[in-house]
Image 1 (cartoon, rainbow, N blue to C red):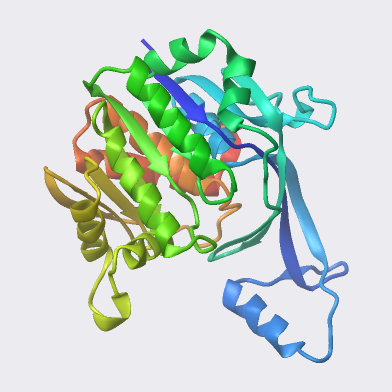
Image 2 (tube, rainbow, N blue to C red):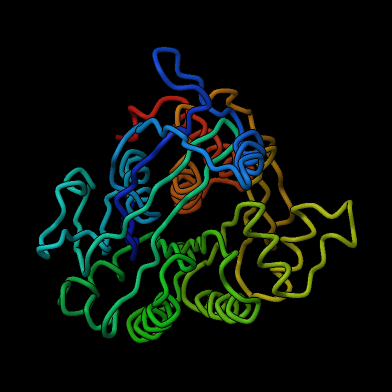
Length: 336
């Protein structure tokens, strides 16, 4: 029997580029973010022209990336997102998004700059005229309750890039309160995404809301290290005062302040989980030359959420999620 996943509520069309240090017949890309950044800084008061090699134009956003990975791993997926073109119809870019899908508004646009050690997203802000939750209810009708109640795993992703996400997530919470009863074997995984553009007060408020979900679903907050630092700072954690403070210290601060079941932090060198079962960590096997990294975090989250639903022990969940993400950045064919 396939496990069921419900995911929402974003959707972007990503143009993924590799900045080139040298163009022409022999293309030489910038290898690292630091190398690119130093070059840019060196052009101050001079100006520069940089060729961008287009790697692909594809469906993007955390929800579509999550669903694509979850489906490839065997889940039956239901999703609601920003998937429409300018006419209001489903954009052809999202035709390959697996499972049952609903679009409630137009897709966002984003560019990603790829490097060997990470990526930089250049995303346009997304706004919404009117109440986004009312639009979702209108577009999905009676199917919405069935999708959410039937889900073994709910994925709530990308709070930071959508200006209306705070209102949307709160409406989603109130809806869940009305239709869901507590079930120990069903999970909700939350990914805020890069919160650098948000104030400490906004981050603290959304963290508090996150804790409320654990009343009816086993709730996992998944963060990369930068996101964990942002969450920790909003809660008063000052990493610069303790050079030895690592992901375990951040996870402890977040979990003490927010009553979620589990905090997962994944860095370039390890993945860590902190819950009532204890603190577990698994090292990352580095991919020296990733084909692409955009979407790797969503792949990790999808695999971790499904491993949780399947009842795997936490170390095996971490290993499974890391393996899926490593496979994704090395060879994407399985996740297409």
